[in-house]
Image 1 (cartoon, rainbow, N blue to C red):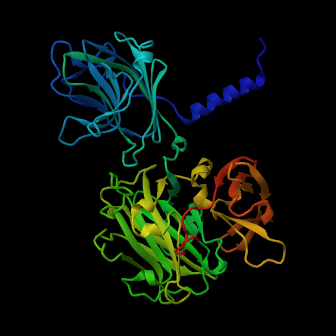
Image 2: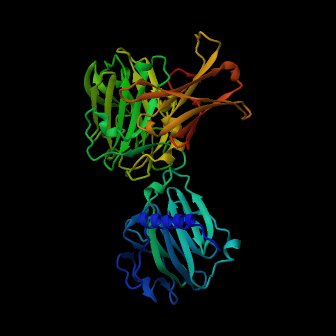
Image 3: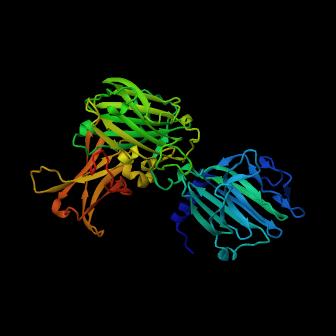
Length: 542
């Protein structure tokens, strides 16, 4: 048998890579319960295993044994066996102990009775979230002996295996459900019996492997430790950047860029504008009447997250960099919601530039006591840009939603807290990073031509190799591919967009649709974007 040397090299590199990025750690030494917390009357060590329960006495209530550390993304491996009739047990994960109570709350990989290999939500929704196929599992399960259990959690995806058979692949649909917490070994109340656990190891997965959660449209990257709210956006150089109004007829009076970052203390937003007449002449309690930002933010964790009503845990507010045409940062809450947050530690910083304004906003998490900022948590927001051309407000544009964001948080976009912007985020975030527009100019000195534009995100332009505009008919057939040309319409701040044209006869109005495809410099596809189906500004149909 001849073995390809390249295969050997690939395998050795793969093994060394895996060993370099993560190593399984033993949670139990087979001898002591050091580092484990629980009711020791119902847990003991026997033959190198943790044993929960006893054969001579009923279990009066659920009991749990937990190590001290919390885990988010991991692969947990252990061996288990159940002894006794009708024994029920399970392994808790991403769970918490209920204060002043014996119970835990969170996910449970179930064991025993008709629940082997199923996913139960302990003390929370109190139901089976995903049921294993017992007919298939029974072919590999040893109900009287030792079995292998593997529990894998990456982002909102949960996978379970027993003896190599995958019992389920579940993705959590509820953004309010916490995705970090404790591991726990359970013995269930009821009949006398024992649950044995041994060879318990856990491998923490790199955070970069955690995918964006379902429905996420943007991210906030981790802020540097040197954050200073002074209007200098240099700290936002690696932040997620969203271009806005890159297709406006008054391009150098309207184009802007929003940036989003976070840390354990606060959420940070940055704004860079092109504007030759920056001004906000509004009084301190009516900041929306001039140049500024109308800000929509939702941190609620329950069923009211992104619902129709504003309430505690969400805020509708305004931040601006001017008082009149003088740089003087200001902040206020929406009238009627003045008790939405206590305004603890809120800061706004601003400065003029040669081409417009730069403004920074700090919103501490202490204003939202029901929320704890953690990696991969999801919040919701929309950032509305208001322009006044030196007078009263004349233009309003929305980054994630539409004018409906004014009325209800359900219009806000889901944003995930991450460390860095990764290439794999392009697919979900492309429509915010690189929105597109297609139109036919009213005045042309040629036969009718269609023009398409795509905005280029300021902090991610270096990865883009080319942009292709694909015209398709209503049945999905391609009518034409047109390569875009990148143009810089303002060097300060890296304001760029892509443009392509084609004869209107190639795309009869009402009989075609447009698709923008973004490729990296190696020719790999990053994202696909289609024109927005909601109004970007306050003019319907725009």
